[in-house]
Length: 334
Image 1: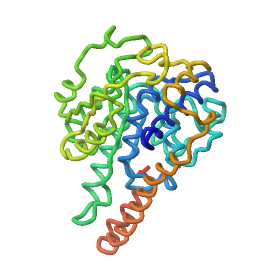
Image 2 (image 1 turned 90 degrees about the horizontal axis):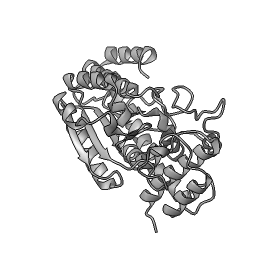
Image 3 (image 1 turned 180 degrees about the horizontal axis):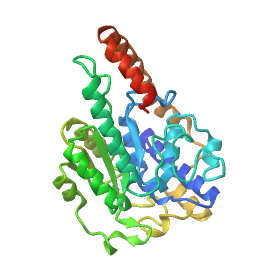
């Protein structure tokens, strides 16, 4: 019998495969392989799904935006307001669950992504904003700006020039609140990455001033949690967590480029469910999964309450700064 962590990870995988199959369009490879990475990120982040504009929430950017069903499955399970119908309407005209994550359309999406590498660049910008605002507004005992920015990327993102430029800037600025989760499966839509891409990504980022952490198996949740904890402990460098994964994990196309950007097929989805020991009806998720995810949402709700109490005290002690912060929030802070 699967524990609730594994059950939740498999729920992400199955929902993704089912939605892509129903739409007859999409990219199942990344959600199947990176489901544990997304789960580890969300269970380590601070957020309140009932208030996605909570100032001091951690930000999550899916730079590999083609794997959007990973985003939507996470938002659905963790209570961001997506419904089962939204999942079933993946990639349909007018749906909140578009082919790529769209800011302002789907609750929880921090920035629209799709062009590879762009999401990481946006995440660097968010981390720069966090560092600047913290320097401007924080006072001793009042860390009102104190959150992390996470970005999940794939091999394709790492091949883009914009990623290297953004990573160089992040290293130079010592953005310790930036954590990039690299879903390293050695596959792109064209096939094996070694056709065109053989560099040591970790060493490149070390040269750019990053802390680099390696996780040998994406399915090792303990190792993922330890890596994120280590990343958060490093205050003066951005962190790249290089995670070896298998594209299409659990499917009959595991490890193959053919599962990157095409549905698995009805038989393929059935095989996936069998391999994952998944017995629920289509688009149905065991209630214990929702209960499990709700605990993390509750943690974020408590964090927001504590932040509001802190800001109230901050406003009493630093009224002009508090007034300026509120003005900045109205104009600039997303």
